[in-house]
Length: 161
Image (cartoon, rainbow, N blue to C red; front, side, top):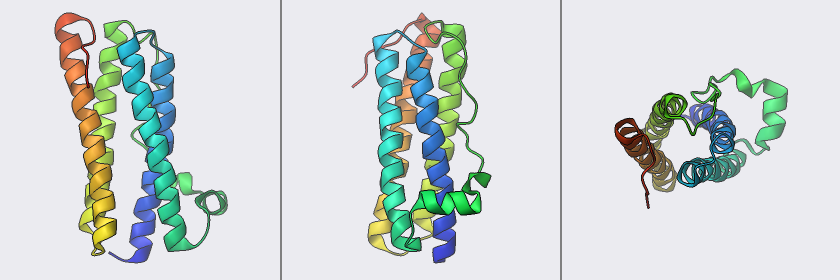
């Protein structure tokens, strides 16, 4: 994979993580349930950390700040799976289930992006970096999928570790 392709992938990932953070923060603000809030806040925090790590990586390749680049080049051209904004009170399962389902789908799409980036690089450190991001997203999807199935069957959250 050429450096320009890696940078395009990182740009897309930055959009995903930025919109994902906002998405999860809105989800956390829409529920009073402590388990739901904790899950969504953890996902928002992870998106923030991932975005910071990706911005540092971006500087390594392009030698400029991502914010500077995005202002000049309309980096928002990348569509994000997190653009669908959650609505309603997420303490009600009829509102929560579609949000969890969408979050799982968006997480899998993001993990797939990272997996593709890992397969396209030869540098072992960079490969491990992208594999780690993909694994983290996949774990979050598993947590949300478990919650989805439990809520669908019982109408309430289950504790997770």
